[in-house]
Length: 152
Length: 152
DNA sequence: TGGGCTTTCATAAGTGCGTGATATAAAAAT
DNA sequence: ATTTTTATATCACGCACTTATGAAAGCCCA
Image 1 (cartoon, rainbow over the protein chains, first blue to last red):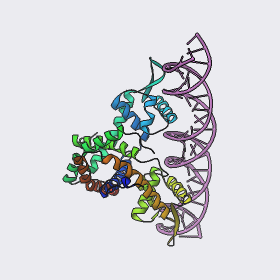
Image 2: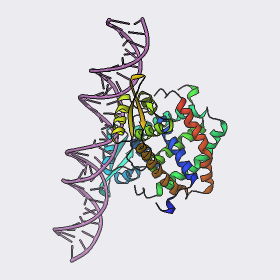
Image 3: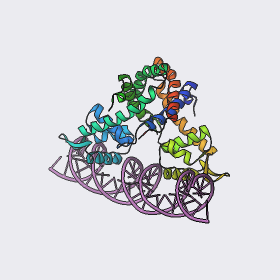
Image 4: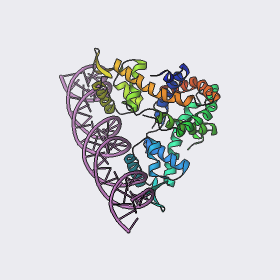
């Protein structure tokens, strides 16, 4: 470990807090019809439109065959559909369907309701702090999206 | 949906932000030796000491056979060990080992380093907001720990 | 033009980690 | 002393991933 790898105490505290928080969020998500990768992929399709299959597996952190299989499952359940690119016979264009959007919405609603029940028990100051941090978290997410998916 | 189930716009924003953030955190965790449940269970054993097997599966949100198998795997890898309760012949007391603590630490370090690399690119104000929100997240986690694990 | 490399997606076989149903043994209850 | 309940394990099965491999379309260049 080189000096530049040493992290500050502050970052340590953040990482510890996030670790705990991650498990809270995980438990908050009702065991639903969608796997983690399925939900994340559908959300991506919802947020930024149709994608080629090869553009999906890397950002989702799974292998290409895994993505092929996931899309097959999603297609079978009617949550996404395959299309073709007229300019490239190899490509498969994946699009979210209305049913897919509905599934994402259901998942989000379930989590939101559970979270909401907790939030109302929280002191107002904590609630405010959480609202205040959202833009920062958003930027943190954007940063990560740009990064090379890390060297594992 | 009854009126009391309607959530505020603020809560909606929080849930949306958390949803995105959850995926960021998920990608931040290097695909490691530990499954999500394994890591969470080991962390619980580290944080609050030995537990009976039956005390573990519910809070981790998995079935009892899943926990039995998880503990078997962890034991095989030397990360946890089974013991017995002198007062109750049925019980199995699960304890984390030093190797288990080390595995948790490795996982935490990996995530911390990746997170740290992102954090230093973030504006100072965002960094500060994240530090400021940690106690609130901690209390949110405590709240959830008390709750009945929800009605699925 | 056509032969070879590259890119894109699919298929196959194997593994990890979960599920529900059920068995077994110890404790508690009647 | 049975019966019932509680704690754990075992079994059969399925989903979602992995690596290795295959096949078809696009690209490159003599």
